[in-house]
Length: 382
Image 1 (spheres, rainbow, N blue to C red):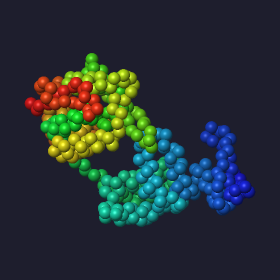
Image 2 (cartoon, rainbow, N blue to C red):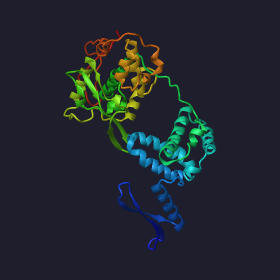
Image 3 (tube, rainbow, N blue to C red):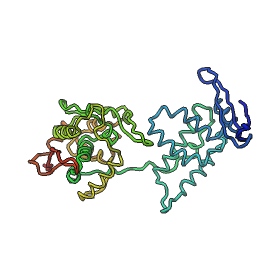
């Protein structure tokens, strides 16, 4: 390495030469240091990172951790992890030498987090505190496992917060039918929630669906991808887990509804998204419909729980529900419902079909700007 002063700008720069993991000689540089001391400090940290020496600062090691981990997880997952680290961990530990951080330092940091109150006097939730601490623990674990840090001070300090026991909110079938009737004025919203409720898919899975994913002959929808929006970009990735890749049997009435919906999209291509909206749009429509229908407010994700509750009320076994929802384990199925499981199993699509009867066009499914909509259904509980 070498440190030079740029006479044209009066600032300092560092030229850094190194050998990468392939044995190739590389060179990079960093400009704009106000003083020679700042340039030399950066040079020192760069040398430590390249040699993976734990005399480096926590902030520098986070860059090592990021380089090691970022490509191994989904972009959305890394964004969540990175946000917690940059806003809740780096401000406290960034300039500390990582090998000098002790359990007592972690405890002091924990105490600051637990003492925090926002402008309304509200503290961090126990679940969020646990999440923050888990990120710090993961960084130190990485240093222990791969860079010879003697021990994990975050683990030694002990965790904070707790894993929240989340009551799974849901709608009954009757509540959902009231909601669906209330949003019939917007077909895109109506059909989106029909897919969510009767198939139990995640909102990201719904928003990634294309016409090619639906086989009307077999009456199935295949889940093979998920959608999220980040920094103004629409991103399609593989589903949440391996088990999330699945094929869901659709009840016939839902196939008919989706055929009508696709017809109104005119020349949509097989690989184009069926629902070109965002999760925030679904949240807004959820609130609008619940208020208009006079049913309790729940989250969009709780529609998935509502589907699980519906299946349980129909007598489905945990294994059937697990496969339909794409859970990795049977235990993942909401514990709130577990005591409801009976010891019988039925054909899901047939039973879903049996929940609906049709009458002549009583309710119009029409958008404010799309009166040509012809799909008209009146749902009545049997």
